[in-house]
Picture 1 (spheres, chains in turn blue, brown):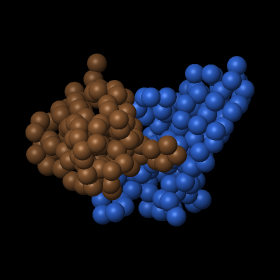
Picture 2 (cartoon, chains in turn cyan, red):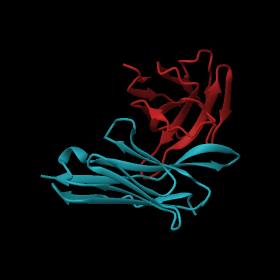
Picture 3 (cartoon, helix red, strand yellow):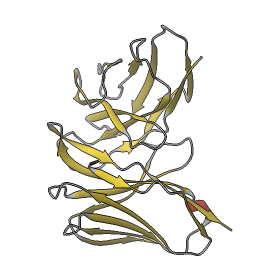
Length: 113
Length: 114
């Protein structure tokens, strides 16, 4: 079982839609959660960084963590064509003998006008 | 502007050749990392360095080597021993290795075999 699981998509939505992106993780000890956005041929850009359960909002983006279910989500309101990218979830956890950033495989999102 | 600069953007390797990817940061971060990204897979850690003159193997270090002679620089060499080098290589940094601060990434180098 992978430590972080993420549906690769692709996910295609019309402009203005609410987008829900999700990941599950395997280790209940993980406590720090991130979402990165990656445009084609670019490096990942940090979007959201959260600690423990709850919601965090930043503009049109809301990150949600449910530690009881080991489930993390990113919601995008009023989606725009410029939101078209790959979204990577990541957790910081102790694995393989050291603390490290563990990534999901990424979900490709396409927002069409 | 502070950030991470990777060069070159595209690189081609011939059989039996070693190639070196550059990574420079001016964020004054102690920790630096190299990842490999393949289609459909998450980022996989190759090497990391917590401090100058020190570095550790990550999950997929075979066929790669690094050095950390300066705080701001962490070059990665893809050696001829790496039989499947075609991938997108990403360099990252964070304030320090032991913190739970997120990592910040450069824009990557795409390596292909000729």
